[in-house]
Amino acid sequence: MEKIDEARIKINEIDKEMADLFCQRMEQARIVAEYKAERGLKVYDPVRENEVIDRNSKNVPAGIIREYYVSFLRNNMDISKKYQHRLMEGMNIAYSGVEGAFADIAAKKIFPDAQQTPYSEFSKAYKAVENGECDCCVLPIENSYAGEVGQVIDLIFDGSLYVNNIYSLKITQNLLGIKGSTKSDIKEVMSHPQALAQCENYIKENGYLMTNSVNTAVAAKTVKENGDKTVAAIASRETAEIYGLEVIDHDINESDVNATKFAVLSRMENPAFNSSKVILLFSVKQVAGSLAKAIDVIGKYGYNMKVLRSRPMKEPAWQYYFYIEAECNDNCDNESEMLEELSKQCERLKVVGHYKDVYSL
Image 1: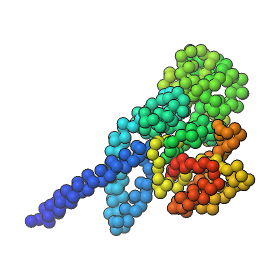
Image 2: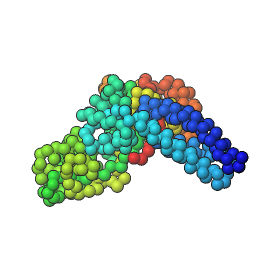
Image 3: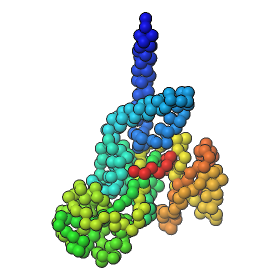
Image 4: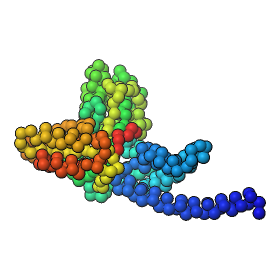
């Protein structure tokens, strides 16, 4: 038998083994897809992907073969991602607003294969996930210019959902009007209060009246339906395309680094060992120094607080709870000990969720 024939027989045997291993690997990919769907996690995780390549490439001797093996690994992961996308097509994602709202844009970027379901209020989108109507919801929690979205933070404090991922969407506001309208025609602008705040200087410079709307896309829809050349909406380019409006002026928000952080909330919690960042909500005991002691506990266990805010509680009046985003500098193995000690200073303590990083959309 020729050497080439022997090699081909051996390749056939190896291919048969690889086919079996491929099926086993795809079954594990299916399990991962289920896990991600339950927790509202995105299919693509660049940090995890790089970790797998760095670790597994060392199983092959250095040299040209390793280069090909890295390509082999990437191809395997690309196939797994496509499979997971297909499995997750049936997900139902809640957001607040109408088609074209920034939350809709964010939801489509995070879950491109899923069905998007709009709700008229943050609370309705949140409750749709709590009661099982939707798998997860995408809600804004902070804008880099206008600050926190208090309504959503309050829902998280009082509700049962977990934050398992946070994404940053760059916000570019535009002046949108009906076809044929010009900048000089505009007398009034409509938009969400935060969008109006982001464009406040532009609005004042042009002497426009301001009218609040539920969100940017609703404002655009209203402008289109009313057909008034003197009224414009402040919203995204995507919204202009959806509702047949013209972009009269673009990039009108004051800050060039304007971005909104969107949280993905679901009924299942992402374990701490998968993440380096944690979100905590708590109220402290009405004893002198309780807040300072609580903050000291967090630092004592190696957690660096990236965000600290206070929010008024509904009951009792004039009392507050605190929102913290913290990052563990070394490892997260001591989180349970930190939480146990922290609880001694708190009336109420809630771990809202864990996440790896704030990913840009």
